[in-house]
Length: 120
Image 1 (tube, rainbow, N blue to C red):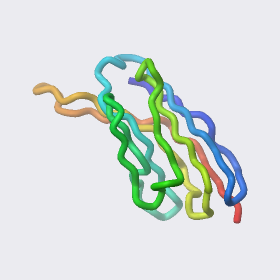
Image 2: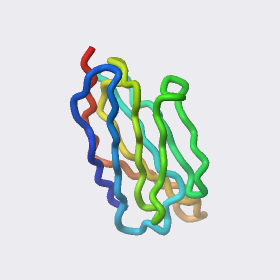
Image 3: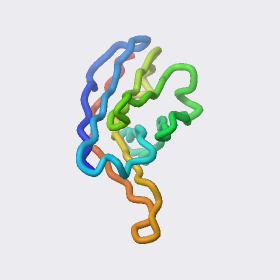
């Protein structure tokens, strides 16, 4: 599975950005897709994830501001980010997690990351 992100950039506090991630390869194996972020000097953290059936899960810090969705073909995931804050500044990584199998367990794939910078 290969993941390609787009949509990062520089935005003022209070503004909006939309991140996109497209998966290719063995996309039939993908269960959950999501977004993680890593700020300088901090660990990578979950932002939001969504299952193949459409169930979302959000970090408390972004609830009510960010919305995750998947495309109809299920191989794309989007993150609509509204009311952005300075502390949302980070590199955002797309993640895809495969269905569990007895031979491989669950596999995780990562995109290359896209920078989101929020100016205060």
